Length: 230
Image (cartoon, rainbow, N blue to C red; front, side, top):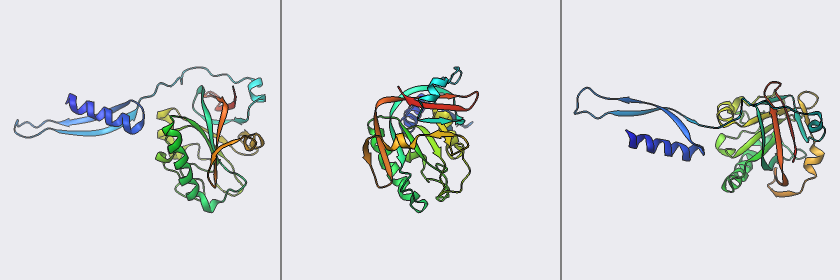
């Protein structure tokens, strides 16, 4: 049994990119001649998240923010991201969301190899099975993400998902899901974003690599968030 558990924990850590905890069952036969059976029940990543800390967002931080939201999941204060992937808003076409998902997957793979967490920004419901409601990525396509921003778009008729399609992943991994829609849940400075130098890009997705880390603060008490450069 110890050898099986060691192998199972190692396999889970490789698959999820973090130490894991597992639930299992063992069927031990009464007869000593039959083999025992080992079965996985659940495997979950173990994360050290500071969800109990109090996060305060000041007026000064709001004034210098490039992104504000009043509908954010989680509770955090972090500064470990310098990369942004965003869906190009001016050329966004709901008929091309499958292609966009594939492009994001390739860029995600490159960033994962560099061990770089990133901010993902785009329209509609991330992970939706209906490609006309958002970008139909699977979790493996964005597994290196650090935080996700769901924006509104006149080209999509979708209510905010609040991270429902990836709820298990984002809660267990401590990934913040932030909703920003015009006139409702906050503000995203697209002029600033589009004015940044592009590090890499595909037809529909741009990759920024900023000179300074992004400070992300999410106050779980009020579901508000702010992002600005350090």
